[in-house]
Amino acid sequence: MDLTWSADEDAFRAECRAWLAEHAPNPPLPSGDTAEGFALHMEWERKLYADRWAVVSWPTEHGGRGASLWEWLIFEEEYYRAGAPQRVTQNGIFLLAPSIYEFGTQAQQDYYLPRMAAGEDLWCQGWSEPNAGSDLAGLTSKAVRDDEAGGWRLHGQKTWTTRGAFCTHLFGLFRTDPDSTRHHGLTYLLVPLDIDGVTVRGFGRLDGDEGFAEVFFDGAFVPDGDGDPAAGGVLGEVNGGWGVAMATTSSERGLTLRSPGRFTAATARLVQLYRERGGSVDDPGVRDAVAQAWIDAEAYALYTLSDVTGIVEGRSPGARSSLNKIFWSELDVRLHEAALRLLGGESELVEWGPDGQRVENPWLKGYQFSLSGPIYAGTNEIQRNIVAERVLGLPRK
Image (cartoon, rainbow, N blue to C red; front, top):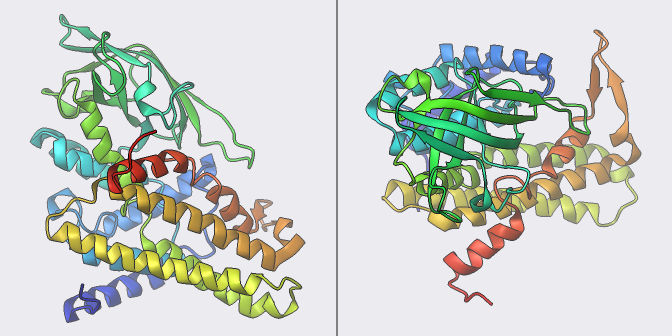
């Protein structure tokens, strides 16, 4: 593995850094999981798209720069180093888009991807249900064949739908074979949320953010997918949705959703916080916690370089993406815990901006969000089972 960057890659980094230094919002935007914050985040997303930074690794015809995976990693590193906002379009561009590239028809690619890059279509993930979370194969939402109309009637409920209250489209799994069980007989569907028979009901979280939603389907119709993509339809093969979903989970658990730049930037800020506060904190273990967080972030960056080397050489990460997910999600919790130890009771203070907006300590907000990491994208307990069985080859009990 070559750890040196080429002259072209160094030039790309310089271009990224200069653009972000000029354009990254300052002060930081409010949470993108509130209606007000989401609107501000979308202004930022449109600015990224206008200068072709929204999806740098995509082909130019889909709004990207045709950048390599190495250059994408560079962009992500510079993006988080600049303190730029969390990507509220991430479910589309980081999770769904790779599956559309792999399984979508040419018409689906040509329609959905440019609109996704431009922020015209905003996607949420419709997988979790009241009785099917990490056990995705236990879902009960169904799509019933309507031969006369040439498509599917949807029935059921999805929940814990991140930013579902603000999105225009949903991608999700539905049971299309009523006699099937577990991961058989499922189909991956693309669904506009403004069609008849779909009800989106937002609900608040304990931290006050309001972007989560429940989505109810009562006979909503989507076509087969070989017609106008604007109406939605099937991605991949009917009853073959599990394979498409596993490709999406590989993106969700692997390098695209949580690039190492996110954590190296966070631990750099943690080290700076220690330099400012460490001498006055009566906590003998906090120094070791800060050092370990920095070491782990650097280790994750090196691991990712190894992963990208394999992808460039044609090897799929497969089940190894579960290792990624365990590592980055638990690292995120630990580094924020170290920050709260440094801040002590001060971490719970709330400030008010000049416009009366509530401003929470970013370390506390980050800690609250980090606690969800070991749960979403498949709980870490499930991920450890996957690693044991599919990576290490250990027997089931």
